[in-house]
Amino acid sequence: MPGFPIAEIAADGSSVITKHARDGGAVTVDTITAQLVYEIQGPRYLNPDVTVHLDTVELAATGPDRVEIRGATGSPPPPTTKVAVFALLGYEIVNTIFVTAPEVTAKIDLLRAQIGRDLPAGVELSFTRIGTAADDPQTQWDATVALRVMATAAEREPLARFGLARRLSSLYLQSIPGFFHDGASQLTGTPKPRIDYWPALLPLTAVDHRTFFEGQTYEISPPEQSETAPQPVHPEPVGALSPEDVRNLPLGTVAYARSGDKGGNSNVGIWAPDERVWPWLRLALSTVELRRLVPEIKELEVIRHEFPHLRAVHFVLRGLLGTGGSANLRVDQVGKAVGEYLRAKHVPIPVRLLSEQGSVDVTD
Image 1 (cartoon, rainbow, N blue to C red):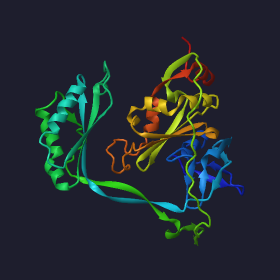
Image 2 (tube, rainbow, N blue to C red):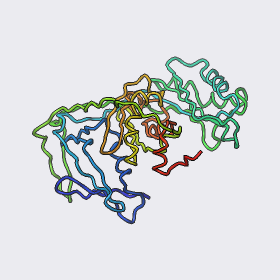
Image 3 (cartoon, helix red, strand yellow):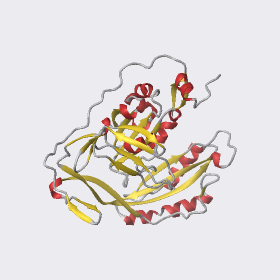
Image 4 (cartoon, rainbow, N blue to C red):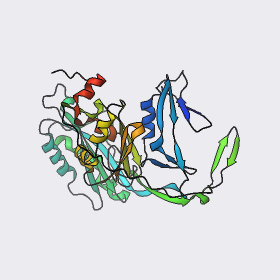
């Protein structure tokens, strides 16, 4: 099992990230990059004592499971600190059923109509199809897709009266051919609370700041200086990709990614482990191209930044997660898999990059 990382911090602010030899896992430039681009809003990362400028950070492997972090700079912290506020939004019930090919779309349409018939006032339904059935399935599961059914309401009573589990159970003898749910789990009919998230701000002077070290508690005074530092504006890449021989392959063939949540926003950082890929990656991953690759964000505001020292392009997808992970209706509630979804997308990758990496057989 992976252990906890260790930071050996030097007087000049640089550090070496490592781990105990007895623990599993790996400390590499790529695993550290993954953490640096994880759940950030851009190059300026706000803390109660300093604003870190992540775009100046440089990484270098200095040995097995040893990565040096250098070049970090900072500026005064903001005058406020974020406080996460949660409140009851309503109630929900979620179940997953399965649909088997052929005619998956038509079968799902019938299920929607049957499940949604005579909805009590105040109850709303959300259906999410997960997966695609193979054209010529080799196994039953290759022919099967999941259908997630979520019912929500502001009050518990109409949701309980709706009886989602009862409705689903009744469909075994009066719905699509081959209807079933996971026999190893029970359909649930009990509403559970649905919680909404609201990020609020408080003055730093209103929040006690303490640190604990070697058994002692130290009170940290509010900073003497503070400033509100906006994120830098990085223009879209200029210049067209040069015409050359390409292969349409998953972006993940030459790039890694890490994604997560910042309130209602999802962020995703994509970086090139090979420095020779970086010039192509920064040109290829414009905001326009990201919208083409990820149609779910076509109506959302997208903010793009570059981290040249990390060979990374970073995007903030504003509103993809609604008001926050605890309340939105997505299956991937906090955007953990957005990065891997992007890596699965096929893009035209220059053959010379594939040849240099030796990762793909490019012979005809």
